[in-house]
Length: 373
Ligand SMILES: [Zn+2]
Image (cartoon, rainbow, N blue to C red; front, side, top):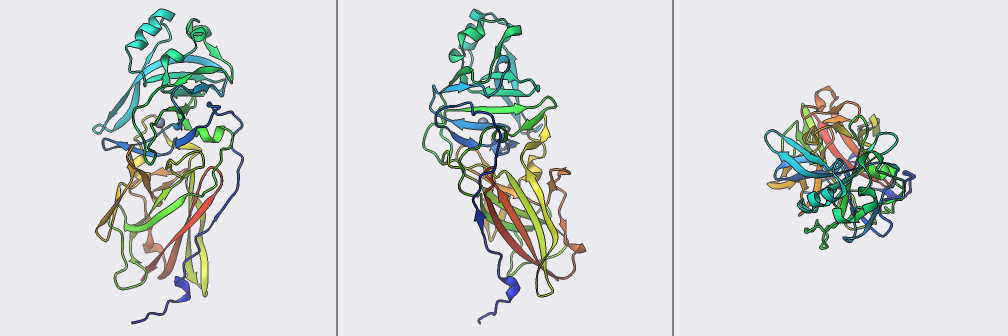
């Protein structure tokens, strides 16, 4: 039987635009070509511990020189990752090598896991710039030979070279030699490094791969069995799988910003009943301290649609993330119980309109329709 598709079911067109928004002014710490392989807001999950990545990963050949974008006091640490599922935590146990003499410094670091060295620079605003995965023998000897109290760099000074990394990260087949740069302000707020540095080339908008509606906190997508659009009632979540890439490399990251609006088909046309508002805007992370906090509220572990499971993946084999768009906003924070309560909506047809932005200002739009009886 042929069905007639009413005008209100014609989806909003997916569209995108190209523009170059001004980012920061600072020089990137690598002068040669590098790939931005992960942003600080990215969902990561190794060993079933979801957390905010917290830093930006810049991939370049091992041995590539790293320069400080800022002037400031220098401290050097070794560190270990301190993560567990129960209690839920992801952090670093740092050992300060500041008080060690030149010879002791090298003796101690020789016995340390080469990859886990951090050069920390505290700038004049007390932001802590933590450069991880610097090969310790490449930290300039002139810097180490100074007492801790006078160890300083000026912007543009060499701080060391990228160490070797043994693994690859999806989808690249090349070894993931990189620095992880994490910037935390004096209040413990994680800052977006890419917003402080000069613009980088990003010509493609984020990709909105899938959009689903579930009952609040459910994993099962509400499907339309007999009608062209799903019928909802009560509290629902709207979920979207969104990925971004940029022109510096082939790596998959999260988007910079997501907005959402709600429209209703009334008076023979679609009218916005809720204007676009920020769902996430990653100038900063929405947490301080432990990076496992609130990450499960903004991201959805998995969604099941017609027996097929879609997952957020944040390890080196696969990176993709499903965002829960009804669990919060930057102002109010993110809480699993939050939802879109459709019991307050009048009967009719609705359309959630989602915009995903990258730092370059490119935008993608996606929509999902639902019906309230
Ligand atoms: Zn990293």
